[in-house]
Image (cartoon, rainbow, N blue to C red; front, side):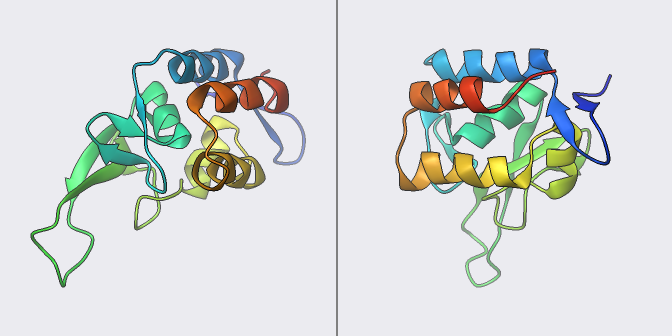
Length: 135
């Protein structure tokens, strides 16, 4: 079952169930908030990292820097064998955004709210509820 609904000419809308589960997870208090990474360890995630968890992703360890091979990160979300994030694990791949029905503009706004404006998860959940439509 797809997690988005086709509207017209490549425009997507997130399925209400995924959107509502994401909002519930953000408000649950289950996750600590991270900044500038999808997963920061110690059960901390940015709002998009929480979305990945809600979508069923697991976060795998990897060493992103060949100059420091002993430094291991756990911020690369993987779902059904596919990596959902960019090289540094800071934002989501466009193919995953399209699959879940989130535009890159919405992603960038959420990154700004989480990292730059330092909104907490409750404020971000309120923003999603008001600004990101479900089907």
